[in-house]
Length: 125
Image (cartoon, rainbow, N blue to C red; front, side, top):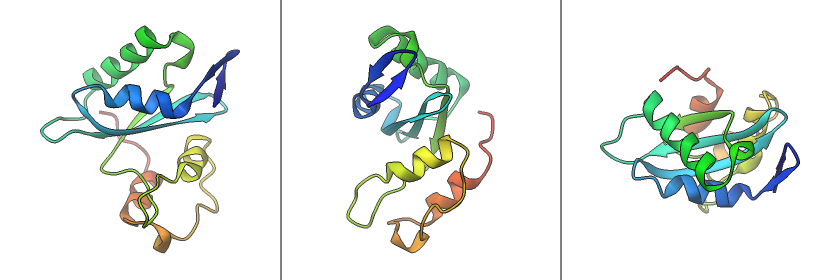
């Protein structure tokens, strides 16, 4: 659960809501001190653009409310997962909070390259 402006939002539900968009293959949302952050893997043949970001924020605004709109939508090639396939939300929460220390051993990730991608400053879309 994420508490934003007195509103309690289920992070998993927000991720599933974003995944209903045709341009999204996968999504995960986490809470940070400044609000909700969304991490999105775009669907094949879809480009990560400002328009897609605005569409996703609009979808959340319409379906959940303005308090749940992500402060940031970050497009990634893949979400950080364990070798067993579970999304490692702890890493996403730390990145959203700006705490890039002690993210864990990249060898424990299914795709260690995702960690490098998360550590790079996001490019503007």
